[in-house]
Image (cartoon, rainbow, N blue to C red; front, side):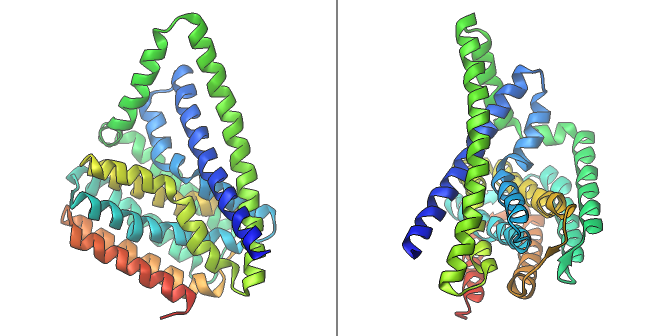
Length: 328
């Protein structure tokens, strides 16, 4: 039965991530077709888009009566984003040079969002009132992004260019092909949403089943396997950008995702119920998240990340996992 549930977990995680990918791509194309600006789509891509797996699995966890998974998922994803994904991206790229605009715009927002989340979770639970405050904070972030449209748009230029180019090509196709493309995108939206919902449900089911069979805390599986799995979109975006030496995209993707995770992935489900933190997430996850964020902020201020720093991040992530498993 353990092998069966591991198989269910892998297949469900694949469906969750692939569903998010299809849903996001179809949303981008549909948004342009309906007249949304590339900037508006870009803001959604950097935050909401790559965090769809975390959002879907968190909502599913609350609906299935295991709300402690939500905080474990966010903490695990944010630690993995910084230590594992940025570590891998910087190691592959050999050196990351981050623009001053990105440092000035997003690092303070990352620090503030992390402090707000840690403050809400410090007592071992996030109440509905605290969840509302986190969502309001994200609203402030969104307004801030709009007020600094030019700077944010510069960091999103590659994504915006790609989407706009695809839309431009379609615009000059004949009527039949345009109609077919629209129907294809609507079908991708529906299929992507279905994969998200079904994948999220069975990810949570398999985590609960495996935790019972292996006699380990649900949070340990969530904060490691689920967190890494739901962070795969960020990993793909960041590594591709690092290989192309476009480090603002690589790092900005992580910053936007971590801000969204701390404020919305916790805030949205937290409106409906108190989100408890299990002992592992509270005792190990929160301190590591605080440390990883602080380390990244100090590293980012210099505007240069070297491959030895990337390797150090990866080693720290391995230490994090060993701590969770009680090996070290």
